[in-house]
Length: 427
Image (cartoon, rainbow, N blue to C red):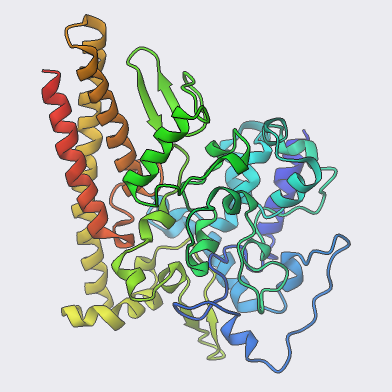
């Protein structure tokens, strides 16, 4: 019952129109740079916002200060039904509703809030980060944190959206110690990364996910290293660190489930080399038609392909390729998505073929163990390649091609060769 009370209370906050900057992924930054909110920072003075009793300014407190940002954020929830029904329909403004819908009776645990609420920090500061705390029901803290919000300005701005751009996710900071990302990428990547909740089964200080870099192969090597060091364990049907699923019958291990590998995939991309960040396309600078004021759109959940302002921004570079209209820009991206989808669908289908072949070989014993182990490794690595190029687990293919198209296509080609050879070895 408490779970329902907590979830519905936060959902009401989002739906009553008092969410001020919730999806502020990478902050109220000028295009492709960092810094404060371009439109409001130019004002003679930023209106003073009264901090709450716990020293926190809530999203409702900022609504009057940033009305355009608020409206754009809420619009991400309002138009969700008008979108195309795939991952682009997700809205950060509906996180509370989604938790209610997908987790029965709002029994989601504290660990879920690591990326769903900046208030996660308050909880672990008060109670620690033991597995017992992280696995406890979030509803059990409803009375203690009565004014907790799912998503707020603090996600990327601390308590000062006018000037501050900083990630709040302490777990990300702890486990990403070996790689220094651009700050404007980190505010998105603190949740859109491989440092997901499945990594929190052990002491954060023992985890160093980027010790082998941010590439698909580097992260996979970290998964293997972690297993060898005992940080990950093969747990049938459950999560055991980096090994997020294990099938005893076939001996197959699935690594890295739960990860949203957008941050890592974007590194070294053509777009990053041009100085772009996540916000450049997902939170473009927008002019208010009524006042002419320029502000940062906070509908970060929307697809750039459905945002005329974002498409126009893409054209500032892509016109050099002969793309001369928003419609042509959209078709260009969709063609890249289709190419990537073809490779991903092949991988998805043939990983199942390989899985069946491994199951048959394990049951009949007609293949030597060394060959079988190599095939198992090919399945695990191929599954991770697929996950890395998906960006997120799900049925939608090709959707993140623009993040780093060349790298994704290369991984699908490598994966195809690896999986084909494994299937042939078991024939």
